[in-house]
Image (cartoon, rainbow, N blue to C red; front, side):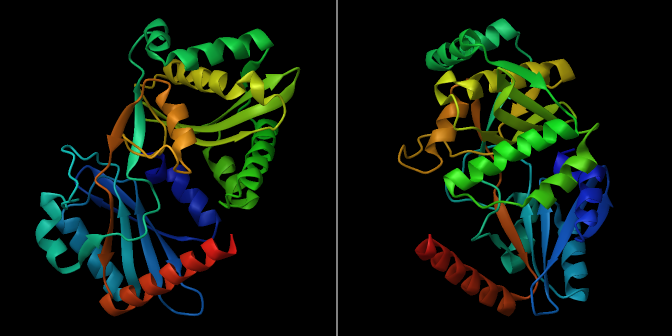
Length: 317
């Protein structure tokens, strides 16, 4: 099970005042959230990182949406694309329903690609597989006196949050607010969430919030300080993340998202994609983001307004 399908995540979303729905089919469980559109009685549904729903589950979601004024449900499955498909053909088990109301999303929330690291190898094997510059930076951080500690406690969360929001301001990235992150931490700590922090002379230089569940450790959020950037604390922090994953019993490290292979080096995501690539990860593509359209007319209007909003934000930025 992915962390975003867990009971802990469900509880966190409820505490944020967000409507949730969990349905089961066979061995699979599907956790959805519903988000009201301001000034209307309509909602949007979201199904993140579940197995790809089959025809019967899709029909059940469609019926629920019809009864509850849902315009569409965005589905972002954690199912990898087995065969690379540039045409983005919809999985066969959903193809007949897709002819009517399952379409490729114009506004994905998760990237289509991530990078996965096999943690079943020994630490020596892993270290040798890294890019030479990555290994050099890890050793440099150690020589400079950077140390990494797991501070999976409330004090550690506050240090992480300070670095995270310092980074978002510096990079002009506007994600979730402090209240959101605090609720997530309070509901996932001692279970799924872990905080790792890189220090120099007890000064936090970089921090990660990691999720671990069912044999996979996920690099979810990160933040860095402007201090001592040449100490390469983030490289050592990722190496310690890998070692923590092995200690917890993880078989894989999921980097949560990146560009795909052969990416544009000038893309705004190129830097962290290259950083993750330095750890000898494997690029992995998911089936993609799909919208289960329940109200076609309002869906078109929604996408039009959403596109106008994106243009406005780009001009404003």
